[in-house]
Length: 375
Image 1 (cartoon, rainbow, N blue to C red):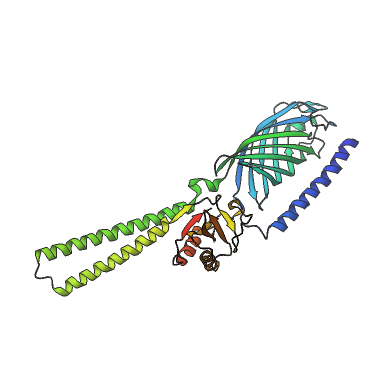
Image 2 (image 1 turned 135 degrees about the vertical axis):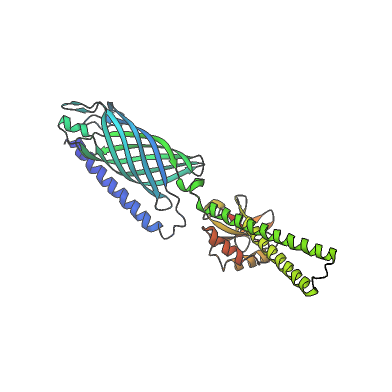
């Protein structure tokens, strides 16, 4: 091993250890304050490698050897800005130089494990940096009297362009410092697509459950309305035809039964309305204020994702403060909003629809209009 390679290894290993230490400390510090972590994703990509001759480490001094292939990696957020990811990729390596010859379409296997840090987001573009280790295997190296496997250190960056909640385009580039004699230093470029399985409709169990509940309410409502109409029809026929054998007490009992059915119908209608009383909302045009009416620097993009109780169009600040204190008994995150001289209240009700709905039902008698919204 030459002197230059020793220096590179020494500097690189210490740098990677420092990065890993910083990342781990960030996880410990940020974990207690973490509100919500995003969903995991799958990155499916095509890739290409550019290689360096032994003893050459300058970025632009690659040789003619190339490797092209495909891969897949799995990304899991562990904090607000930190993620871990790893996976497997495969390529065919041509022209890797060794003392006994060069490789020809040699199978090139890699297993990666990395940690990444998000550092800049512009519109729908999220950039990040990462570092980690990779295990490499080129079985054909045994024919060239070389060990077939080795390890390298990854240092790189990447970007994601969000197309939908479930799909993003992705690009990664990383410089791979080899710490094994048989695996040359190389650049790897990856381009592919990030998929978030939980955001696809066929994986969204909560939506299907809500739809099933709504369908059940509709079925029960239709059934009771049908019975109600039948009983009213029978009652009308009995009155018109003046059927003598129907006694007065039987008619009263039938009317009482119809009245009870009407109450049941009204109760079911209210429950259905409460299910329908749900919407997605955008509060980017509102100003967040404190109890004295002063505007805060908080914006809607900083709010925790999930379900909120929303009380709109309150004319007086004192009245808005009263409703805020009432909702504050059920939520530890309540906000006072101002728009066009009208006050509103937002109270966090959780990220589970069924739990949020119970909180909404408990506060329906607040004394002002109250709806359930999702951010």
